[in-house]
Image 1 (cartoon, rainbow, N blue to C red):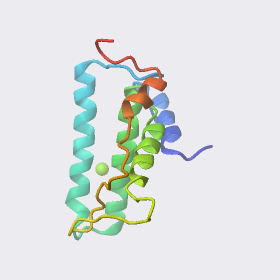
Image 2: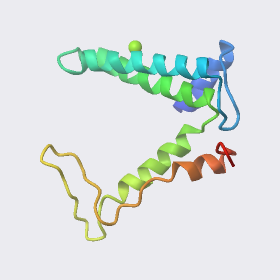
Image 3: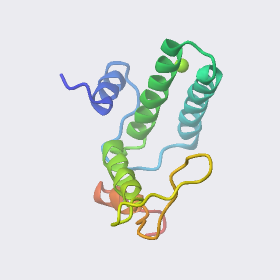
Length: 134
Ligand SMILES: [Mg+2]
């Protein structure tokens, strides 16, 4: 059994009769709102324990965020692994060919002149998404 979040969450949705779509699709607004609320709840729980919370609580809440995010992607028919790969590709272009990395004062890595933004739309179109109005 694979332990990738996408596979685990798909198993969960199947076992509990939750929504799952095979291709990127607009879902009913009530369902979309419900998924957004679930994710906001979990993100708030991360914030609660981020400073001073015991490490096992932080790990738990971070995993909940990822689990619910993958579930939300599945509900919308999005293959989130492919989207994450695209975000990663773009993030890695923040390193210039000379290996230089630009940072903000707080340490955040900035986009350099060689940065190539993620094209999430192209990823979803490869997954079968037809944008509204097309
Ligand atoms: Mg939680």
